[in-house]
Length: 317
Image (cartoon, rainbow, N blue to C red; front, side, top):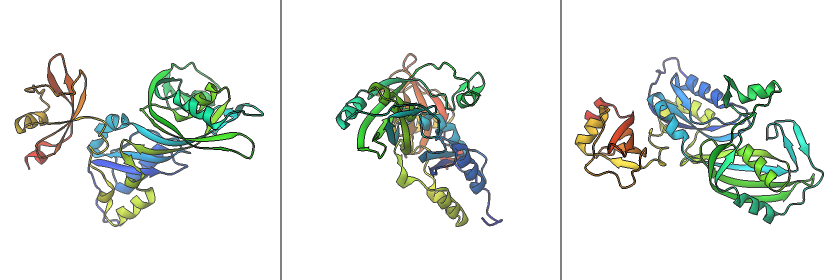
């Protein structure tokens, strides 16, 4: 980057294809250095050995992180039946192993079907969840295992994509999963194995989408660096509402849009057809300008502001 390159301060979503070997925080640090921006946040941690879609929020779009995190995620994973580790992936120490696995492809497919819909998961000890001021993996590295509460997650789709027997005789299964925020694919693989009576472990994981951001919309860190050097980095940045397709839309009249920009509660002539209490809406003006996130209060019959994103001077300009 030339010394004369100006520091930028813009909003939007920068979808990075995270490489193996970096933490999500490493990716954020590199993006801050390349873009000369401090205000950058990621939208969901990926373990260092995991690759895939990692959207970064730039500037004021960091205010939307929680809503982008809530978008469904899609993963491609591979798991092995026959042994288990303390980390539930190949990074850990083997804690259980069997000599032989008698399991067919059809039996494995039937097991997957039982995990679709709402399920409960116990978060793994080697995870970033905080308990008593420390992350679980910090407790685990001290040899301490804490009791964890099961949490509900939702599996929208789970399908077997490949099945073969490894040289060591253990079956290896590949799957595609579309799931809610907070789903641990490592734990899903462990629980699938347990459901058919065998220890199992996740051997590979790729996040193939966050919402409808897929690999073809992502850039690598190397590509980002080249774009910055050519002062073309804006080409990689998506509008701040791009990943929010899981939130229904609402178009406001000019009068309501103007009031929305000032953070006012809005009384509509008629409630939105899909509105239930606490329903979130992406709101737009008649010209398609994204105004922000609002929530419907059914008791008061009002639309209340959550995050105002459009700037008043931009709107009037």
